[in-house]
Length: 83
Image (cartoon, rainbow, N blue to C red; front, side, top):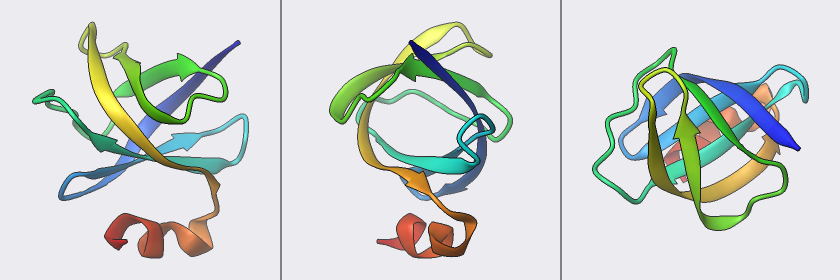
């Protein structure tokens, strides 16, 4: 299955993607020189952890990322972005 989310916050090299279906954030760290911006729609296979590839549907290319965490609540978002 495919997960779809929207980039909502960026802090240095960490990116918070809001996943409406899950009601939480996925935190990733870029491993490639890809340029991701707020509002970009990102897609990935469910359950991916560690190093993997996310599809930037807004810009039409893949980005190599390292998944930092899934299902992050808004209350823990700030802590996760600066960790």
